[in-house]
Image (cartoon, rainbow, N blue to C red; front, side):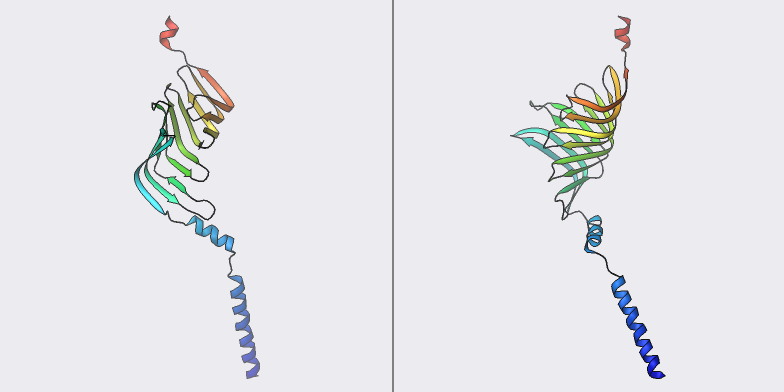
Length: 192
């Protein structure tokens, strides 16, 4: 009887141990997903100014109070601008052409793409103002686009809709799905 009790005890302990060993496993994919999410920045900088140039001509200047660079297995060089940013675009003569501000941004080095989010405002040299919550600047294609709501205020009208695409200087833009337009009448011109 004692022998049966000891055998039963050993079998129960062995079964429990085997169950614990096989039930506590994670796949490598789930481990890597958690590891990537919890990655700390490899670089962090304060009060950063970055210039983008082509053939010696400055095309844009990006400033941000905080930048954090991340590296992952899948994508190298993700720069997060967590406390806001400002980008000044210049024309071919070096004159300030357009100013973009946002509360958050990410730059993907390999893709040569910047995504800005939250209270995105664009002001052009023609005094046009554009408001949206998400904008993508594709540096390779020299275009800027969005798939969310956008409002554009020009000196003579207000236009709004969903989706937007433009060249980098915002000279040639269009709203993909226009929702409305209001003409603004200047009181000086109306009295003449």
